[in-house]
Image (cartoon, rainbow, N blue to C red; front, side, top):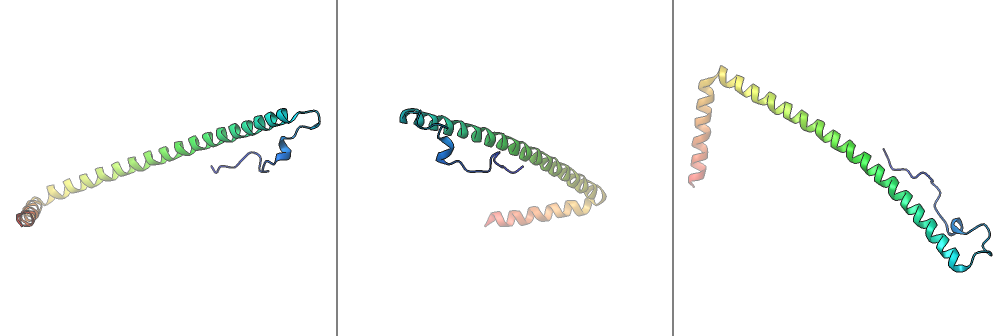
Length: 109
């Protein structure tokens, strides 16, 4: 989804000149140029807006998928920890007490 302009040729001042420049007065020529530049700018802005919207939607979808994977992984780790504690309750309690003593000693200082 790369942004590619619909017209790859750059605009030049000759693109804005009417087919019969002698029939136009300088003020009309300037207005014609302004309208052409305005139309080109509006088209480019609309193209960019649609590109940005598509890109944002893709990023949002990818982020949602990553979040869901992270939540599933956390749930698996929680279940694994519960299983270990149920199979080894003495080790789990002694480990918790040891961690608590170490934290208590650190906080006492």
